[in-house]
Length: 55
Image (cartoon, rainbow, N blue to C red):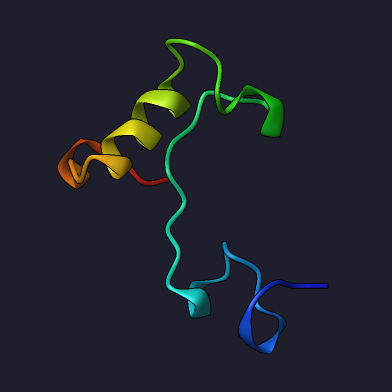
């Protein structure tokens, strides 16, 4: 089961989404204080896309 138009999941290249580097082993670690994941999400939110490394 997918999300959005045509049942495309967010990580599918057809959706236009990008996969950021992460130090989380799963969804629960994405928001850990000081984590790489949190810093990359913050960079996206404030528009500092040059600080975001893609996987």
